[in-house]
Amino acid sequence: MRRRWILLLVLAALVVSAAVVVGWRLRSEDRSRFSAALAWAPTSAARFSWTDWAGVRSELGADLSASSSGSEVDDFLQDAFDRDLASTTALDASAPTIQEQLGFSPATIDWELFTQGKDGALVIMGLPDDFDVAGLRERLRTVGFEEPDEADGVWSGGVDLLEGLDGPVTPELAALQIDEEDGLLVGSDDPAFLEQRADLARGDHEDGVSDVVDAEGPALSASVATGDQACSALAMTDADPADRTRASELVAQAGGVHPLTGFAIAAQPGGDVRVAMAFETDDQAREDADSRSKLAAGPAPGQGGSFPERFELGKVVATGRVLTMAMKPVEGTFVLSDLSSGPVLFATC
Image 1 (cartoon, rainbow, N blue to C red):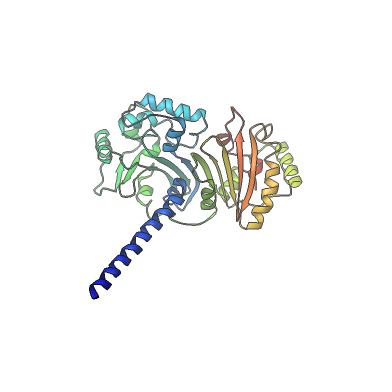
Image 2: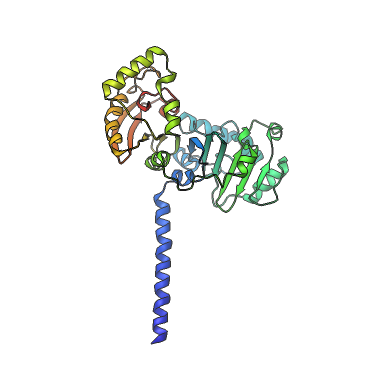
């Protein structure tokens, strides 16, 4: 009898353990790659530029690998730009060079999150499970990066080393850190900032930025800003006086708007664009869903012309503190790249 009870206890423990593992996997699958990547961004970041390179390659049917040439990678990027799927990358001009000389590029990495803030900038790149990390380390040694004492330390290159390569490379790759445990390659122009990046990461911090990133779901590319950044970079304050006056009239006619706590505009699989805005309260989100949908369906002072010339506005939905706008770009327009910087009337504060 005692043996039977011991066996039952062991089986129960195994069931609980399996349930924990399954539960963790389900929660992980429920989060988009974008939401998961956001946890690695610095808490001081105010602007976030996302590109799901694996998703973009799939969307375009691109057949690329570690052995692809720099010109093949360049052609892929041009196709991505033509589809408005690569305006958010920090690696565009660097891609052919780093593909051939450093062993990584948009042809091989899973995703890229470029973060900018008062303390510094990072290019955070997700590596696929089969990425040749040993080969990357050897490439860095060969071109002259100074190898760190620790496996996850910072490889110091510097701008002078990058300028000596066979093509242009962004200064954001002057220092690199390989985090093999978490499958990350991180670059920065500031080695000291890069050295601290794990300690400065957001983690599961909840704010307006995390709200809008969650609302965007599996975005292929996206531009995201904190509320303060959005209210300065996207507001009408930089428009000329006539456009500012017209904008004030349109906002008043629409019923007014509330300040944002987070803003995102993202290209979705299939070609649509989704905007997400976060607010302090549910009531503000509901009120602004009405007023901002009116603004997004009318004139576009500061941008020129009207928003319907750029996109067909679909459903505008307020869920909790977040409102989302579905947009179908007019053929030949570049909604994400054009409306990622201001003035953008429907995103004004």
